[in-house]
Length: 345
Image: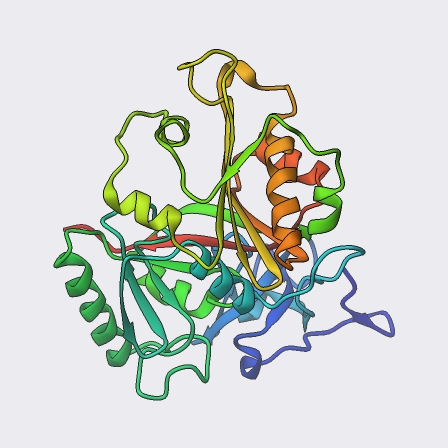
């Protein structure tokens, strides 16, 4: 990480850079300019009263005393362009993914979308903030601190409370860092960190057709049996969310014996150039047979037929096995997101 000009360390950021991605080197002891240093990379979310707040990619906030800085600079966003990897803005993918996992009820609060679906998945029961909740919504990514934000949050709390749900925001570490910091300072809890990953669709489908995989427009009871193997029950809301979206396909690999339940399942929604994969599950006793790849390949083949060229999927950061599989299939990280839940009384 290079901070020098002519061999000298320089601080090349100011409070006017709030909202930009920065790299800051600071001394572990604010009274010493030499000695042990630490480097922090993230979005500069505030600079007040001699203290900087930098929000890292994982959503954590780092407070740095201005007096401890020995170097700093604005750095470009993490490059999204890689050979064979689709290029898209965070907002394009966030809105595409929202269409592909549609909520059952929504209300606009400026550029915030309040979403509810009977509690089925955080994605369909959280606020999607694509700008300011005020009258001039949409021009800037997120509201500033103060009474206007507090009033908007009160309205959010009432809306979700009326539906028996916890109020949550779905935020990206890249675009929503200022809002995430404000919610963190108000006691909202970060949870369910995940990655949005993207990849080219054609290589995924470039496999011999696999006759074990059956495609359909509607998921049958056996599909839901594997999807809901935890045994919580499949609600009407769950069925509506899963079957919603522009063009939805379901994949099923039947079990070896009649009535044994499916060996693997998957879901894909086609929306313009994008094919979004979700609910890829393999029965525990049928793992290591290549069934997850077979399911995704057949869904990808169908999506290509409908005109898609790029793929996306979401995976929890702690799911190492799934991430390794998607690495092998050519997927790369695009951005991170997580949820912030309102304080409980």
